[in-house]
Length: 213
Image (cartoon, rainbow, N blue to C red; front, top):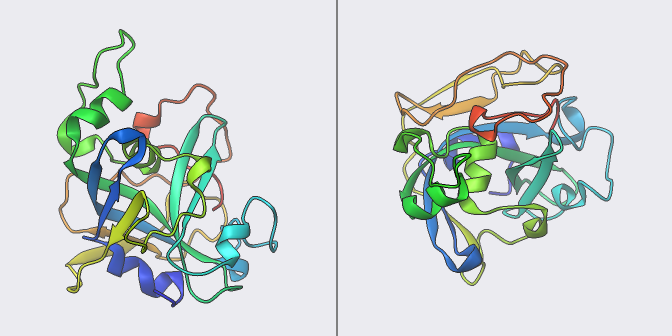
C-alpha cells in the first residue's frame, strides 16, 4: 500500500472494510474510490501542506482519514504512499454484505423507522458509506491493517474489472481520470461534475462531496 494513491486506488476495489464500532459489525465491499495525490494535487486536502486537520495524511500508509463535509456528513479515506507524501484514496461507495439491519437503523427515515433505501444504494456515495460504517472524526488515524483495529481493511489479491473517469464534485484538478469503480455494480454513485456551492441540510443519501480532499 506504500505507493501513490493513483496506483493503490484500483486495488482497493473489491476489498472488504469491516467496522465493529458501537458494538455492531458492518462489512462492505468497496465498489468506488477516488485518488488524491497530496501536495501535487490541487483537489487534495494536502495541497497546501500539513495542517492539524490533515496530519494523518502525512503519516504512514493504511490509516483512516475522516473529514467533515457540508457541516453535517463524514467521508472516509485510506492513506497510502510513504510518510510525508500525503496520498490518500477516498472511499466513494460500497456494497453492504454484513449488518444491513444496522445500516438501515443508522439511516432512519423522518418517522424514525429504518431506512427503506434499496440494498444496493445503502452505502452508495461517500457520506452514506461512512455513515453505514459508523465512522466520524473520532476514528481518524485508526490503522486499517491492524488485526485488532475496530475498523479493518482486507484487500483481495486479484485486481477486478473496473472503469475509470473524472473525479466527482470538485472544481480543480477536474481532468484527472482518478475515479475508479467496479464495472456494472449497482452501488456505484452517479457522476456529477463539480459546482461551487454548499447545500445546507443536504441529505447524505444524495452522496455529497466536498470541493477538495
